[in-house]
Length: 350
Image (cartoon, rainbow, N blue to C red; front, side):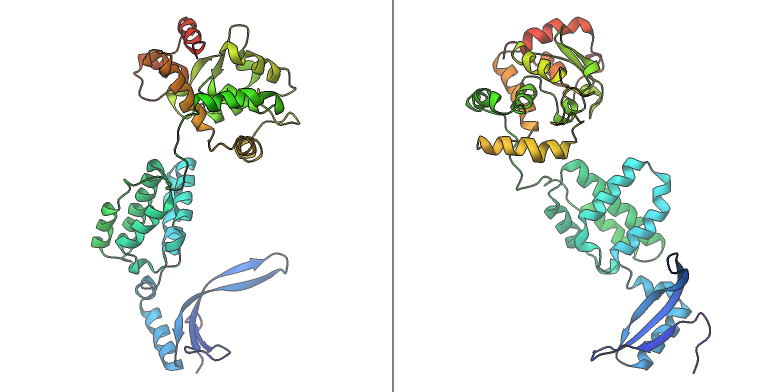
């Protein structure tokens, strides 16, 4: 018997299968520009042992297709449907955050949404190795997805409540290096080998300025005032990171070297191009640390600067102004040129 147009179809799959009968329905069409031909897009309802079971499923699907599909819709499908509605309402940075969170949830992608339990969500969080801000974004995404799922009757309202019990307090990658400063002995090691590779100078510049690696790699020469021994961080992760940074006498020679290079940015690649962080970290920082048999990451230089300034007895407020730490009051984030002599005096103590 021929089924009505648009009703769907039942057919038998080839090979020796336990459930050889498939039921499907055409949900749309896609056009292949190269072949100039249209092809149907199918919604597979399921696989069955007999033709009768497949036909019953197809009939039930046509009675109420949403109920039947809601029992099989996956986490990835819910994310896709939710994001189609939600993404047009939020910023590009939020969209990137949600997409990153979704990628971290790879274990959930093919799971039926109705079968996901709190333990599944918690396992993703525990094994993610992400920090607290990232996990907060992920938990928000879970909540919004479950709001969507409740609204569209994919799950019941009590399923939405379980998201609040997802624990994100154990954030961080257990395999990551402990962030600790370079010891005095390790700093001396870098000084001893500085002439063996130009890029050891960058390590020392980071240590004696306390800037983030992104701040140094994105620093343009126009913002470096070598005669007055300071440079201006124009872009930073935080508002307090926008600041005047003093240049210690010990590293003036390195700033002078890089200023003489033919590049818009202060620090550049061997062919005088702007550095991308990944390129710098993989091709320069990591090999240099391996040569010295040290396990440090660029951010450790920032901790080193703070540690050295503290050991030298520099006032905590001046340290904050030099490195641009969070937690400063409104008046402390307004950096003025009057403060520069105090910063220079402090940085030259280390």
